[in-house]
Length: 158
Image (cartoon, rainbow, N blue to C red; front, side, top):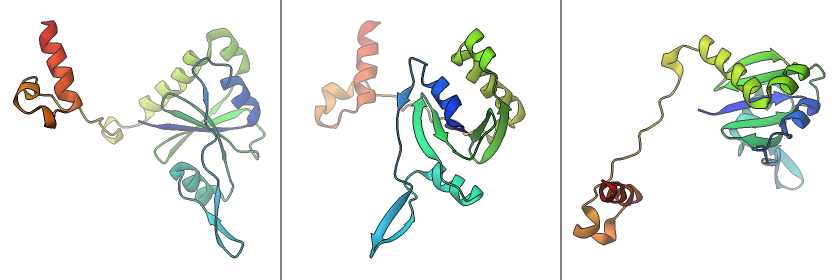
């Protein structure tokens, strides 16, 4: 499950204080197709979706796990828009609460509220990792997969 957060630059600066925040500026918002003609880039699927919906460009700022952060310079209020798929959830941002409880708790509380509102059937199930064959190493070492190696190591531990 991937989440996309769009907010103002001041709130992004608060998120950057978190030790697991990684700067990721994303892709260019437009592509030159020749003769000076530029079109909207669709390499960043979410930014493309957002631009089509709101007719404005957002800028990738970074990630925390599976949460992507974007800045929309037209957002002046202290709000956070969290997108789960194409569903939008808007929350008021409280700087005192984030300083008091920490960003992990604060973002977690937003995500918990989203999951309470979203129907469980709508959440895509993550695929289970394929089970490996621990005996494949001896049978055909040229066709061993990573799952086979993990299964072999787990079998050895027992």
